[in-house]
Length: 135
Image (cartoon, rainbow, N blue to C red; front, top):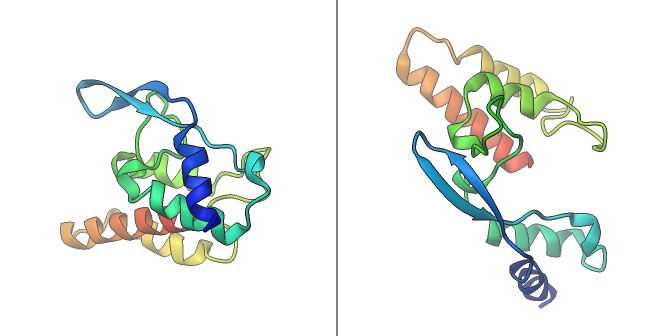
């Protein structure tokens, strides 16, 4: 299967050192993927490989924080998550959360400050899941 070839190609990429913002000094190794370098693979093959390599939101960094540290989406502040998910970078065709699903995302964001802590936590979890899935 070509996705296994793609996984092998990505596994062979060099790793970059980064300091994760987990509240402690921790150096991690990460890989930077440029999907444009893998045009010989279909979109489904790339998606299968990405789902294999990035197994959860604890492993996905979508933007540096204001401190410059790498923070996975599961640990981003709610404000940083919203900005990173809805901002369209110059080199991108659209934001992670595009206009089509923005109303649903905004509904979750409106519940971040819900008086019920459980509802607020579920809304944040739902927003993180949506960002992960859309990414």
